[in-house]
Image (cartoon, rainbow, N blue to C red; front, side, top):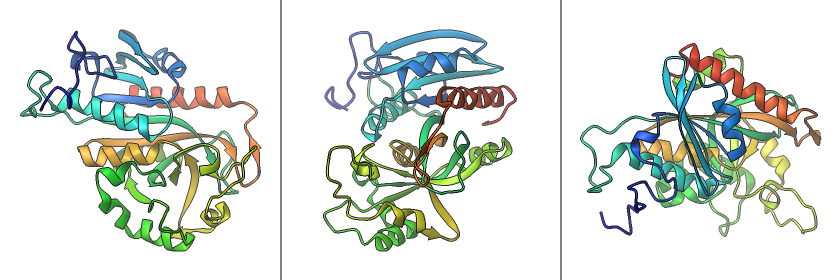
Length: 290
């Protein structure tokens, strides 16, 4: 593998993340906002390493009996592409030679994010774990186009009557065992729709004219084997898709701060996010997400 493929910094750290393998644990909590990293790591029993490069901040330490890292990705699946590929490289490649390791390490990703619900019955300030995700971005088209062929993705494409100029949605699932742990913690299960942006791609209009070729209400109505699309975000489909391709485990947990059906927004968003983080941190201490 040449130097333009696997790019390292002068200190041997991987290019964008700025860290080496010893700086990261195989249990990784991902957040979008770098300012949210210390909100997570305050629950650690010990912090052993911190680093920030661009919007990518990482704290690594111990939570209960387990080594754990929390890392910020920034917003969008384009950032997920960078962060998850480089995290995988730390645990799957010899950074000096670029060759695959004889025994790569399985990574467990727990994404803690915020989201807007599209179903009327999903309450503000509740938590939704994505059983699966539908990607309206184009990331996984470059990795595994067969994800567009999943029957749910095909059914949704036909239901929305999407024109050929639009990317075909793709489907990726979360890890069943990790999802079941979230259900044991009282979270709701849903299907997340991942969009390439926050405004027009999610049907929002401030000063622009919306040209979304389908009505967002059609997403609300769509049902597949009695499962509904529950919420919007900008990362989950990329996280699930890359984890699937790279052979890792992932779940995405969302704090519901908005309900698009009702047009409402949480009165306590910071508290809701804090409560989500605290619940997951305590669960890790109690040996959930093994």
